Length: 491
Image 1 (tube, rainbow, N blue to C red):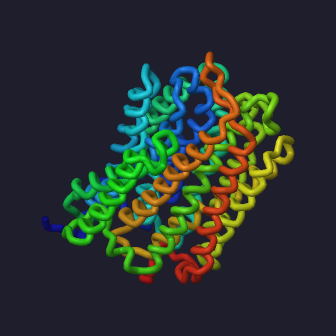
Image 2 (cartoon, rainbow, N blue to C red; image 1 turned 120 degrees about the vertical axis):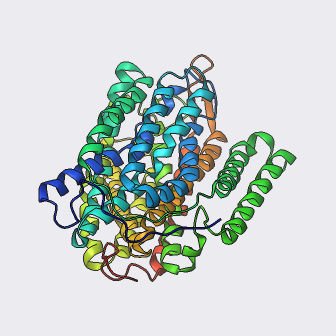
């Protein structure tokens, strides 16, 4: 297995040399990259409010797998996405991911069983690499002095999704049912694909790899088994042979994955990049932060959409649209703090931006554990978490781009996506177990589950404690203490 590297490729046909394109082309390209990158958060944020409404169609306690499947697919596909983007062009891979996303959306919209729904979600999950490719494409086609702010603008675009998704989801769910969300995602992707193909320039940087499909299979199998073991442990028994075999088997496969990756000439994930503390500490922090974000996104819609009833104190009974109105500060602040975080990173270092992000998220989760039920409390909590989200999306790409060589930017960004999605998947699985142990009642007709106060209190606190681990990593990390360069200077 050999690896062929090309660092001085021929310019792409029809592509102006970087720095010579008219300003409007940079603006148009950035706007379209932002719109395309929305697919990754959209497949999660649009679906969070829909989870409580799916129980009437799929009578199962494992609706969390509607989210976990997306994260698992992203974890498996991201290493390949990074390699393919470096080898064949970031824009080409971006468009391919959009096509898979559209097909998955169509399957979900027409699913008549839980298994078919999960299959569609797996295809959608391949778009989890969209943001990583977007970050790498921005690095390749924009002048270096613009890159830190441009990366923050991509983060702001994710903030737009955080702002718009609850309103879009609320309108569709309340008026047309949860299936209409997937029809919307299908149409969004289909309309955007040709415009991006025509107007966004391609990166000319190439680094060709052999694809390590065996390594990807080991990674997916190991993570999948561990997640199944965690999600089923309460049902099977935590010390039962089935649970132990699943968890030990998954851990063993992940160990085999590490051994394989260190020996194969062209690994799926270049673990040698982790030899440098800069990337390693960034990824570890993002693993914990991914857990926090998933916990907030999973718990808040269920907390606020549960009707008031005897035995619980948190019931507000919001519709999906009302939920959007109560929590819109999250999107507004995410959108506003993305570019701000990019500016702070460029002037003071991305580590400071990361620390601010983690502190804000921990504060929001701790406040949510008090089960607030007044609108002003929810809006304030949402604003605090939104600040954290905006700073988070601005810090990570700047930290990674300054930690890896330019020719491995997509691989580095993909590794960031892998750990964030892994944190997401672990959170949904672990918190799903915590919630399942604290069920107050289940409607036998609709299948709608009502959780006890303890379920939400414990879950929010677990997410906050995980965040404290992320804060510890961010505080001691040496990387990111100098102004971010967008990867223009070697570290």
